[in-house]
Length: 333
Image (tube, rainbow, N blue to C red; front, side, top):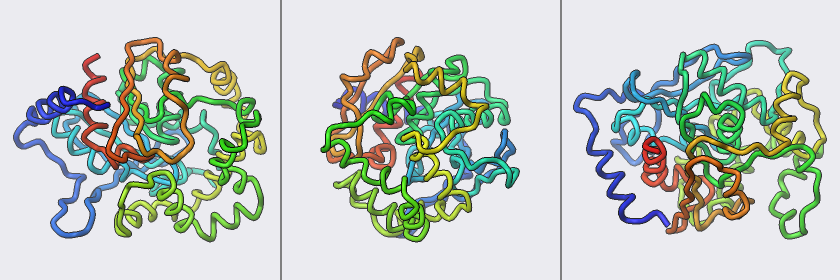
């Protein structure tokens, strides 16, 4: 569990916040409305123009935080000020298909395969002239952070991944699971049909809210908190990216040839050598592996934390202090 001495470490780290540190991207929560980001930046990076938020000193140690599906950058809305006030330069991008991130060309495939998402992170780092960074993520974001750490360890100085090692392959995705496990992936099979694509397009907000409820059954989010993130699903490429991601996993959609070599390397389930902390909530209702099943995939300095108190799948938003503490701790490894 996330114990008392780690809480003391986090409290001490937060006490190091420098006076006058600018936090321009966080809107003050002066009413009942949930906290939000008030300044979205845009930058050309690879095939995308990426929308992102940034906070903290530009010369601070870089931290890049990656969201998943069906979530958005607000997964980290309470994490960002904790890290920025402790002196980190924090970057939180919208993934392809979310928020203000857009493709440069209408002819670029709306590809959601894992290697493409990871390549987007490298392109963003290059565009921002960030040589290396600590990476953190959950859901798609954890998988993407895992991939960057495994394939580009020189760009990743530390990793915090919710639900641990999530690197997979199309071959692994084709292997049948026991019926109870298959039931948890019902939406993946729904998305493999034309009806599923049309249904997600028509009911994307209702669909996302249901996933939030199933994945985090004890998280009592309100409508305003949900709508703050749901707006990012209005991105014109959102449905294409989501559907392609899940169909690709089952081998029902092809990827782009330029990512073939990366996917071949990922299919070998490479070890992650960088310092890493994995986190799991005690009320995660989404499919997730047992920590014991992936511990040996982390060959560098590594530790795992189980969080109690009804913490579900969207762990950074449900437990921002614990997630921030893990980032700061791995920074010291």
